[in-house]
Length: 359
Image (cartoon, rainbow, N blue to C red; front, side, top):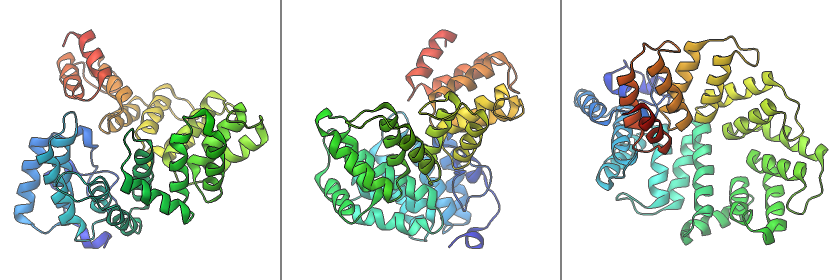
């Protein structure tokens, strides 16, 4: 149920809590870390009073509660409220809410019973309308599970079952903890070759780095490294596009130094909401690199998008622009300090910058 099913006028709830990666969103949207929870919750509750079964507004209310309960310090009560709002929207087949709710079922937290299969079912449903976010969430959940210091056995069992059925993301995730063990590199290479053959861009890129360096028991093979990097770039993973863009910018892993290719891939990943690519694309606009015009305002917009998603480097860039009156900002040290104080709840870099500014 996309498009016209959720069409409607933009509200204050959309402005204050909407997600710009929501395929059914209205308005510009904002990253979770940029939401002012109290104001957003009040606006969304008011909008829902007038339109109580609007799944977009329910999803936005969930984001507002998650911003209050999950950014900086964790509140189980607020996260439970977020989960209930997401579930109400997901039950109305709202894709972005299905993606968000999957995490609650996967982890079995905040009043939700652990149910990995329900989590994956929600992501499968969301893939119809929100494929990039659903697939990214799936990769993240698998990777977080296998890298956990105290892994959940039910989750690990699910990932292993998926790997046995030839799931590329599961095969890649199973290799992650083994990659930290020098004695298990042969197992890693086997898993990641299988994953790459089945379409895992992450596996292809990590193997490319190993072939280029000659690590993990592999002989140096620049040709195979290049083949795998190009295979990774052709995939559909914004995080890998960002990695490849950095490689083009630096001329690393056998790639030529090519700022235009870097800019193209940064933009590709940025458009899909990758916070690291948004920051790097902002750098390119600020400097006029990669064939892009020097555009301070576009740079500032991208830095703010990245900061609102929790990119610490972008937070510092925005605060400095505010304090120094650059990139279209009025010089306002007090505003910069207030911005850093908010970010300091979750960013050690922001705390350090705040001390430098005397805030």
